[in-house]
View 1 (tube, one colour):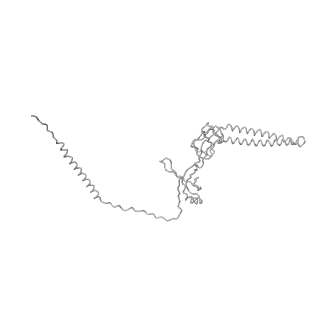
View 2 (tube, helix red, strand yellow; view 1 turned 135 degrees about the vertical axis):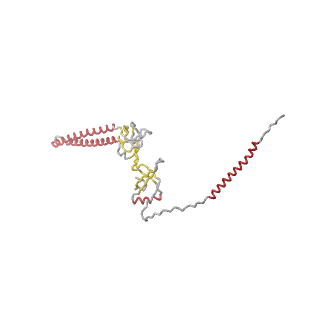
Length: 289
């Protein structure tokens, strides 16, 4: 006797019965959520806005007085004076007496050039002056000898006149020697490069041991022909522009007296606040001293 196998389909039937149940539960949840939301918005009481706060009123006495008229414009800050320190002689630099960015005073020594050549010229001119002064003194002594002899008839008039001419010639030579001394002193002073005014020194363009050429000569096209640039920043110059329609009013105001100007600038760093400078101006062009 044989037994045939029996297959059951209960799990599949159970899965088909659960699917409509899940769909029904989901629909009930959506309907319940919509109902609760509708009740929330419908039953919520409407809150009316309250009255605005009262505005304080401060009483003051009416006064008649002038009020400032402010005009604004974009400006440009620049050094009041700027000078490039050059040399009038061609010599070797033996010392640099300033640092980059240093504040310098008028007449302060910036660099020393080799003075030996010009010192020798000065010594030679002074020696020539001493020699010619001695010749002049000797000529005057001889003239004082010839004049009595000429009066007594022992010396001719021509000899006295010749001696007087020699004295005049020696006097002219002495004047030339004095001029040569002044010239040598001037050339010697050119070996000291000094600041032309109070300001701030820039970056030095030459170092010790370099040869700086005079302003009329040039050693090489690529070689710097200057020592440093000095900028005067105290006081400083501010140039700003205004509308053309405001210029007549500004000129009229400046004619009545000094006007106050305020320059405002921003630092490059973002974490710094703007700074302000209060300056006075008497120039219609807008340059602030």
